[in-house]
Amino acid sequence: MDRRDLESEKARIHAHLEALAQGADPAAIYAEDAVAEIAHPYGTCAGPEAIRQFYADLTRALPDAQWRPEILLAGENHPDARTKARRYSPLVGTFGHWQGTFTAPLLGIPPTGGVVHLRICEVHHLDETGRILRSWILPDLLDLMDQAGVYPLRPMAGAHGMWPGPNGGGGVKMGVGDAEGGARSMAQVLDMHTALNTHVGADVSGLTMHHWTPDFMYYAAGGIGICRGVEGFRANHQVPFRIAFPDRYSKGHFVRIADGPFALTGGRLYATHTGPFLGMETTGRAVHIDVMDFYHFDEAGLIAENWLPFDILGLAHQIGIDLLA
Image (cartoon, rainbow, N blue to C red):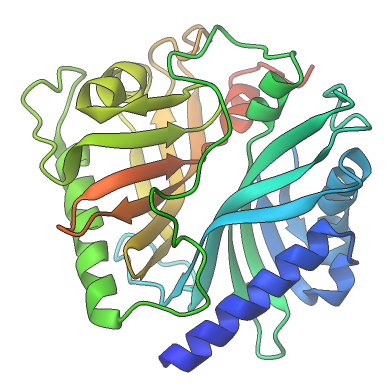
């Protein structure tokens, strides 16, 4: 697909998501055979009617919502030899917030009566008619619970607060980056993944972080929180996650796209809950974890910022804990 077509895909998704936040009927935006994979408790939603429930819940809770995108990227979906699932391409990915007044309960989360910022990270693929055919959506409901004063886990190791967009701006552009630059960005991300995934054990003192700037910002989902630099990343997320899930593995990414100085990967991790995680005691259960990673590169091609949506509510549900309750 050429640049002009990718720009059209990006613009169409932008318009669709803006309309959905303003209460548009998903049946006008999603194809009849659309499927959306949405974080717990929604799961796999097949067809506009099932998808409508998710958006109806959001618009009921935030009736004056405005979608505020921070990153919007589009690209051809790079291959992943680990998966034999259908490869949807091209894809458009975005991270942003539904900003609005929280006036009615959402899945039992009590309204605050004031402004909240519900972060939502999502990936979409259009059919030939311009409607959405496939979606993957991770709303951070745990962070919303924190904003509502009903946070159910131990205090976050990282900082609380609304995720900012990329340093210096430029996260939302209707143009697309050149394919060669995107290939370099994706190669850097995948090389970094290989380094992290082939290092075994919780002792990461010998693991180099040469793909990252020394003071990179790491914006992890509610439960983990925001941290800075190698030491913050290791203390707040990397080491605790390795202790809890030492045998984690992936069956492949559903998304691998790059656009200018931005890249996005996402998939499902499989693991055994071998150690405590975020205050949830060890269960020994087999679990899966849905996750995405948005990356922002500096001029030298190093990762300066990383946003990590993560379905912690779904993980907790699999080990017998209903955090929404």
